[in-house]
Image (cartoon, chains in turn yellow, orange):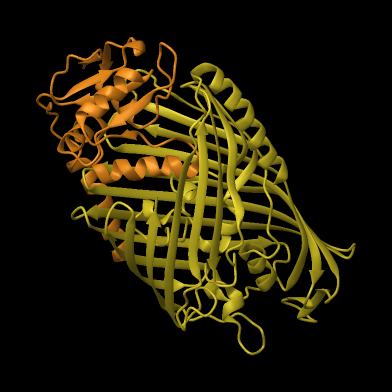
Length: 414
Length: 145
């Protein structure tokens, strides 16, 4: 984190000198920000901590400072904080901070901490003002994994090529690393459903590639995103791990509470195919995601298991702006997951295997800076619901199959 | 739920075939102007769209492209519809996306054509649009198909 900040300052100072020499003016610093406060209430399942009672622990804020220091060099930094139930707690983090050298339209270079790109909308999920819906379709952009899907540190290339009358092909490829918050929602999910306590998690390498084709048909664009991650985790087992068998003794305990474990993930790959069509005030979008997560689990030297977690999800969405002040939106998203292995653990709950969500939203633009939104969800399944907030008295996650969610949010942007 | 899925899929797919044939009409009087240093006399409509969506950031003749707009005007709305295929709100949010991901700066916004023309005249790499002729030292960009 300190390294990136230093990089930013160095680029800025050096850039200032170059720019001053060229224009005899100090570089202008642009400041932009956003602040949003939301409310969530759900029926039958807690989507987030205490959402069955209704919660205001749902907000985002951010501020950025950017400067065009020369014709080709642009630097910037954004600080962001969020609160989502008991996650985030408005802790201020560097969201992104990078220096951008735009050599040609077909080749640019970025160094520092950059937003992770998967699908068309992950980069902008923190900025409520940019979309009709409060929550992005959960099947592709689940809140539960949001803390690990925001940014990466590294180096990236980007640019655009325009092959004749075929439109534009925009590309972006980045390589680097990211940090996993041990207090975050992703770790929380695995700890709860796996009965483990993760004490260390390292992302060895992350590759993020993205191709977007702006087709010759006005308003139609299609994209493909690849996220490839290698990571290792270790920790302690918090509950005896017993697997049912079809023959006597009908169950076998493979690991005991207090055993140390390690998980190697040689392949954690996410592919997203995206399409979006804009015609005047109508925007239609659809995305399809396939995730493949290969895991090797070791419990001291007693037990080893290779497991494969696969996820398939998609959504379709339509929004229409009725007037300068009102926009309507509807989307349907579906998510399913499957865990396979030689000795895969028994399912925690069948409702954790899938989730289907029908959402309708209305957005009011009070003016260019203020928006107010409301949306309702009818949901079947609970795969993207936080298990920790839905435990029964025995500490086992338990869900209602059909449930609903309502959200409202107000945002100010400058 | 299956019926819902099929219906929503149809709702998504059908307009893709029905809606795209948007009419392609010119806007009377609208002129694209550039700083004389840009030395760009001819651009295609697609070039204008690429410039105003930040896809083209560097002029072929070198130097950064600086976009000027007349926000909150009928001319702005007509220009976006004709050249950028976005409504003013879509255009504003498109650039906000660039600003909040660190990938670009918002276009320079002006209240009057006079201010916009002055900016284009005095700023290397600037491009804008106006509705009425000007005698100031700007390059009028010819739009080719």
